[in-house]
Image (tube, rainbow, N blue to C red; front, side, top):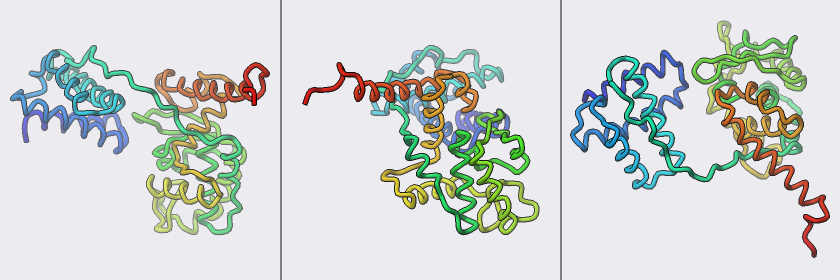
Length: 299
């Protein structure tokens, strides 16, 4: 293993065990830093510490020439910048050669959402089996509280207070926040709790479990959301993050309180939340086009 790969491995362990990032995020960092390692190797640069800013700009240019999207380039540069911050902190590098290097701006795609009627259609389940009751609780909690898939999968019994209607969420980087749980979600979770013991192992802490009695994994949860979207007659694919986007956009449509939505979503930077203001504007623009006499097209 080269010195570069050893250093990257140490950084990845830092992400995994100190910053406590999800395995999905850690894997993304590894893929992006593998590109950087390959770049150093092809140019005979023996270690990360020897990379200079002009060479870092060449790396960024190479990503563009390889045809990567602006989003992929931005992610790769962010991974490299983060790695060098770690190296500077650990006194393994003197400078961060990626400071000041930015990705080309690309068209920012707005997240896909369900409208309010579609969201209501999805969660309007009449449960019959234990699995139905569990899945109903999952869907209601996603839409009620705007959770990430990884956050819902990590939720333990101790995290939720049904009497108070609150949930302690462990988000990115191990940061916690408290979010409200709506009354429909509380009711659905109470019904699932009556049946959870039929499945869960005696020492299992997870709120949602599978037939084997252990914590329900993220992929299994995602699959159940897809299954119910089909069963409930929605004419497009639905995934957990779409429910999170729907939660945020529906709140902003009615309240316009961007800071509150930022807190509920657990966004570190409000600029991440601001994408939903564009969704809200699209909603208002559609209303305007339909209602304003000067906006309607003549037939």
